[in-house]
Image 1 (tube, rainbow, N blue to C red):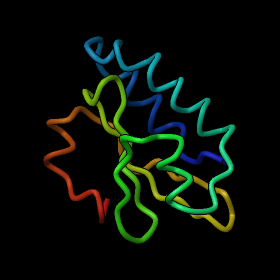
Image 2 (cartoon, rainbow, N blue to C red; image 1 turned 135 degrees about the horizontal axis):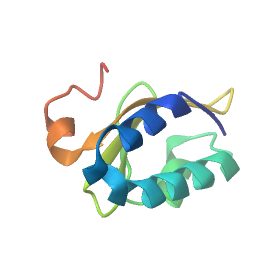
Image 3 (cartoon, one colour; image 1 turned 135 degrees about the vertical axis):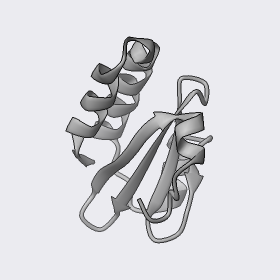
Length: 100
């Protein structure tokens, strides 16, 4: 997969020292996504069993034991994943994952 908006991940990880525990799990997630070749949501679930599949290509990934969440939009035909949001579980609860 091609990952767009890596800057979103970096900006979050560098924003506060208390997010340091998210760095390695997020980078591991990123490396795994780069190697993926997902054509369907079922293939995402196969690789990330805890991912939540939303409508219109949206997926919510749990990172670092569900302490952090990544919301992405996947364009399956073009194998592109757009990072739309990364934040703590509490920050995630304040957004609309379907429209962000």
